[in-house]
Image 1 (cartoon, rainbow, N blue to C red):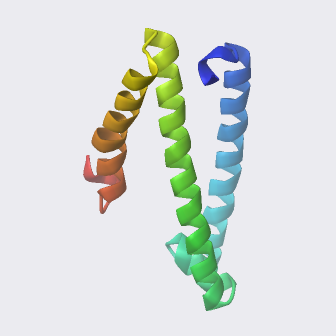
Image 2 (cartoon, rainbow, N blue to C red; image 1 turned 60 degrees about the horizontal axis):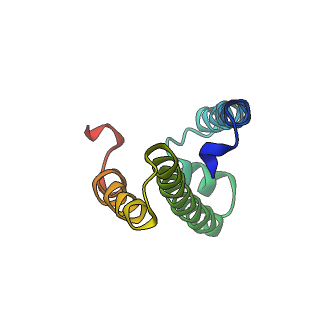
Image 3 (cartoon, helix red, strand yellow; image 1 turned 30 degrees about the vertical axis):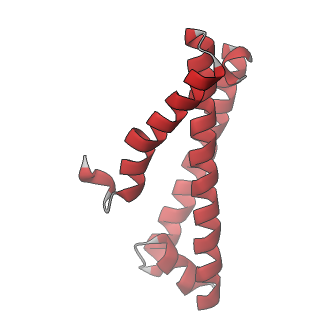
Length: 114
């Protein structure tokens, strides 16, 4: 389980993820300034062939679905380890988090809706 691997391992994974996020945001912001495009799909369409914009959009969708699934898996595992809940309670918790946390965030038109 993710809650059993240890604090140092988790912190090093979070630090590596944060570093890679900063690098990728910096690259995207540079490309945005140089191309004059303000969305990721527009940058891909401008830099590559317009059909590549469709491919990068599909890759982004797969990435988002995988991230959401990973988030729910980790939440369920941490909940089960922290509370000692059985499998049925863990599944109910994952469904509730998905319905009341993930679904509203996925359906928001703007990130700043909260």
